[in-house]
Image 1: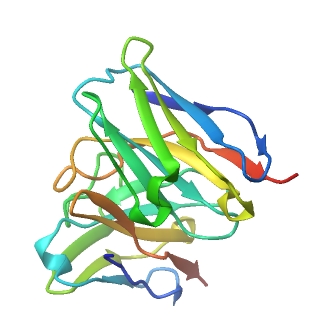
Image 2: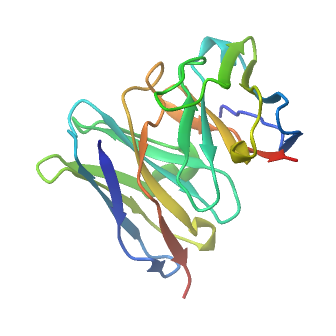
Length: 106
Length: 120
């Protein structure tokens, strides 16, 4: 079965750039999206179709996807961005999530 | 603004069948895919399966044949049945909407989630 791999944790200082990776076999041939989940809340999509931001998502969130790796980049990270982030893609009509990355802003 | 609401028992006994319903309001159930996703306490997200408004389905192979997803478009509801549950099925269960299985495969609307505990 298809797997997506994320680092368990990433730390960043306020105002700096955070990058969270998601690796999978030929992931660049698929569309990747990213979800932000804060404690006790449902996930919210922050990036879809590799690079697109839904309305209401700040411009500091951006995405890329090439080769075997998709990357979520948060520029000028703010304390409110501290959350769990999950990548997701579809493989043969089966939904797949990465294991999640806890972003700490300190 | 579409809203999704999960409903069903919060406690299920081992070996029994978990049954949940998701009610869609504020939008159409047609022309969309509808998925169930779960999250064990303190762990990550796991996709369970989807149903298209026309009735076609697909499930996570890891759950094998334990999953049944159905839809009632007249009631704007879709449902999940998970049979032979064990403690490992204890999780927050979410329902979610998506437009496709590739470029529009992102889950753009989620329910608030409902905790289902498997215990005797």
